[in-house]
Amino acid sequence: MAASMRRFALTMLLAFSASGCAVKPWLKPYERARLADPVMNVAAHPVAESYMHHVHQARESMRGAEGSAGGGCGCN
Amino acid sequence: MQLMCRLVVAALLLSGAALHAAVLPEDRLDLMYHKYDGGGMEIQGPSVLVRKSFADTVSVKANYYVDEVSAASIDVLTSASPYSEERTEKSVGVDYLHGKAIYSLSYANSEENDFEANSVHLDVSQDFFGDLTTLSFGYSKGWDEVFRAGDNQFAEEADRQHFRVNLSQILTRDLRLSIGHELITDEGYLNNPYRSVRYLTSPDSYSFEPERYPETRTSEATSLRLSYYLPWRAGLHGEYRVYDDSWGIDASSWQVKLIQPLGRQWTLETRYRSYQQGDADFYADLFPFQNAQNFLARDKELSEFSSTVVGAGIGFEFSKPNWETFDRAGLNLWVDRFRFDYENYRDIRVVTTPGQEPLFQFDATVTRLLFTLWY
Image (cartoon, rainbow over all chains, first blue to last red; front, top):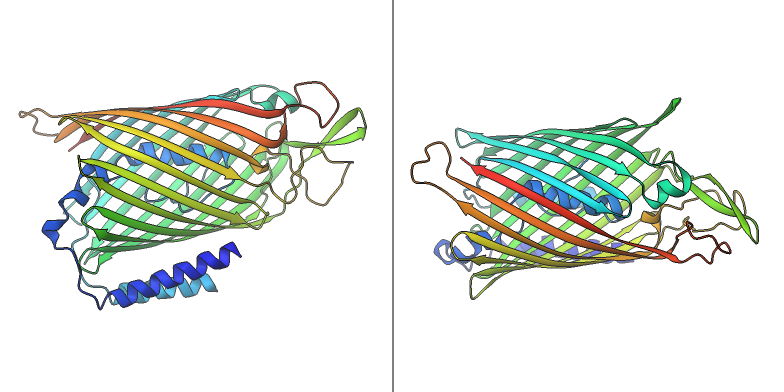
């Protein structure tokens, strides 16, 4: 049930994104300075981030969707 | 099939995407020392990453990582002898900027004395909708070989596949949302070849037999992330992740992280993470008799438990005007404190009536020290 809900939510999100292509972007490039600030990069150090994913994966059953520095460590 | 549909939708989205300037990762050299200390396990070693771009279209990377393991965990103490071993992981990858998309391909090899894993990873990422949206999807394939120390006849295999998609959307000038989903399938020998389950032989005694796991496992994880720029220049990052798999395990976690600059050179990080999971359908701390069911597990990672992490980090960046080869350098130190509380995994080092032993719990400390050169 939970998996079906997630699949539905993801499909709706993709559909929303597709329809969003017809909407004008609501932020100009010069309005994105804060988003480009290093404090907004949660994975600024990929080696450190990957290691922490590995620590979690080795001690938990949960795996996958870790984010940008994830993607499988091949170390089960 | 549903996954294929999702990937087709993603491909269609990409084909009609507006063009924009994607950016390759920065050139950098990372030297990290890592240490995990807790629950009788001490694991430490280096990790070295080199990344270099060429002609503004190609970026290559190589990573060398070592785990030096000294193991005297509760698993080991109750069914084997303490041991030491080393795991070495090597990976290489290339990112290719073509048009407005980034294609990433990488290969990883992980080796230890009784285990070898090889894997390839392919990812595609593209920004569109005026740079407000980033869509990424990827695929990984892994091949594991499992051996058993002291048993030359034992050799098993397992294959793994990962399918993932991620959508990142800028909502306001201060807020970014990201949603990711990953499906993983495993097929083959998924046991730990050393671990045993225990079963009752009488009301006052028990014995052990080898674990038996199913030979397939399929899992799905979905994550929701929000990053918010706070008015005083700080980044607040929230993450919620849910998980379930075909072994009957449900899990979820949430995390809050704050990245706070202190002046022009220093950065302070703090985080709190909470995790909880249910147990696998075939898990039991104590089975009522030998061969009580077709699949048997007493791996504490398959039990019902919760954990929390409190972490802090400090970073310092500097540069010199006369540096010609390097842009800047940085030094970071993070310390994370873990707490694990098990709901149906008992500490059988305590001798009492079987099934009445205290529930197991332990703390662990994870330390990371990172030196980085950007060039």
